[in-house]
Length: 389
Ligand code: PLP
Image (cartoon, rainbow, N blue to C red; front, side, top):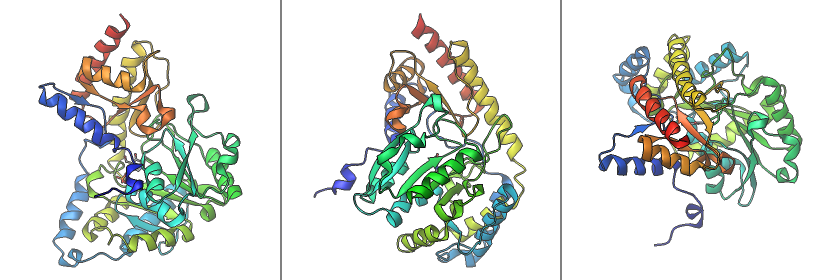
């Protein structure tokens, strides 16, 4: 048996590795506290679960869904974009439901990338942008992001790397850095994509998860975006629905049609009952959101307090579910991650899991219950003090 070259080029998924290490420690009897994966600990709001239960009792939902999703769900997505961003979408040509946004992110290159084509991957970033490009035979080209540029690309430095590129990936509010982008910055990205004849793939999975008064824009608010961009969205983080596998892509009708063609040949869509629950979620006015954001902000502030008191001089992130912190001088991401596991029994993600520019950083997820968070913070505090003694 011989594996394909394309699969050999793919590193093990970061969290599969972390899970393995945690399992090892737990087997040794260590009470491990994980700040690893960004998977909301809070439950899906009750009204969405009730809608699913009702829809699941309707046998018409038990058959194959339509390939392009329920018209009512596509209309609900368009309604969300109209109310939230002032963006008008044609639910038939500019909206496509996904089995979670990860699925569409991984499949998009199949519609745009021929073997050897370049894909511009901003990093540190969500690992699936790069892996999706590799699986389609493309050649990922890193666009490094830097703290001193607020983790936004300096397009003037991209230069020849963009020649012949087919796709550019951007994500704000950002996993893993927690950075946000303004509409002016997104306009810059749209201009860059239009000038280079590439598709701008914008990942807005955390659109509603922002703090300190920042309101995240949609890339589709930028003039000209509908011709050159698609935007990925998800119910996962906004409604605590990671296990339900439902998201969407909106934007350029050409791109939506092309990705739809890939998907109709691979999957058969999202369970209709889940889509009906998705309609209830998007049309709810999101009454759960203030409390959800207050919870994450409190957790963010608690973690920041520990690091600030230990001497870290960084701002709290303005978006997403993560705190992104530099490692102590002289300690690499992997070394600091290993030390926190050894000395504190605490799991964090090494920045290098998100690309080479993540070296010198770690990521802590805010999706951990308050009691465990408190215990984890106290252990980290002791490890930081010990490390400096
Ligand atoms: N995009 C980003 C930036 C993410 O961090 C994640 C999940 O962690 C996803 C997309 C995928 O989310 P889902 O497939 O659950 O919609």
